[in-house]
Image (tube, rainbow, N blue to C red; front, top):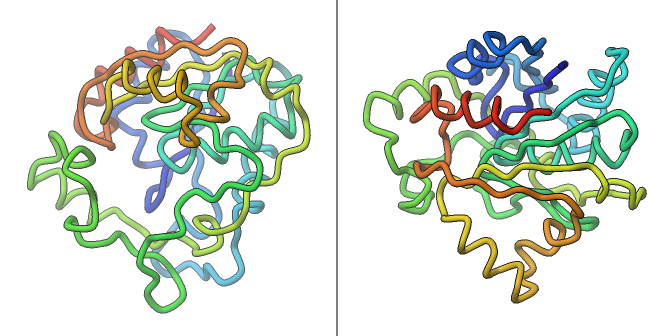
Amino acid sequence: MDVILIPGFWLNADSWDGVVPALRAAGHRVRALTLPGLASVDDDRTGIGLADHVATVVQAIDATDAPVALVGHSGGGAIAHAAVDARPDRVARVVYVDSGPLGDGGVINDGLPVVNGEIPLPDWSVFEAEDLIDLDDELRERFRAMSIPEPVGVATDRQVLRDPRRYDVPITVISCEFPVQMLREFMAKDHPFTAELAKVRNAKLVDLPTGHWPQFTKPAELGAAIVEALP
């Protein structure tokens, strides 16, 4: 199947390098995306917003001639959900990697520090301890070296969704920072964090205990979990 990989903040297609081999070995055709403004630190990120990133994923879907699977990490999960909303008849499954669907009107993260009109990877002290599990000094150096500032609009623009058929597309959530049981408790209590997730009619939740960047900390395990999730 055609699998489109959507990176999270500060990352581009290269961030999936440790995961792609498992998907290809399973027979899938894989396309890892570099979203607008994330190809290089020298890119002009002026005016790039959430809609631009969603449009890039939609274009990738339209470039195939068969149903696709979307895999979105972190903020890429919100982008994947918006792409499903735009093409609910073309997406066979969505895999959310330590992320989930963001509802209409929500923002990915409007609390990140903005520097010179963009959002560089912050100091590690900005993140919660759960984010950083298994991300040792060597991986932190690698991550920071490859990181690219995120366009402000992607983090702060409101999600725009229109088609309720998005709830019919099956999903798998690979939960890393927090156990699946916690997500289920949030859903049972109608917590805003899981409000959109709770509306999806066919949702499977699986645990992959590590920090927020499993493509670095547990790439083989993440690859296997994505393969297991795909149709």
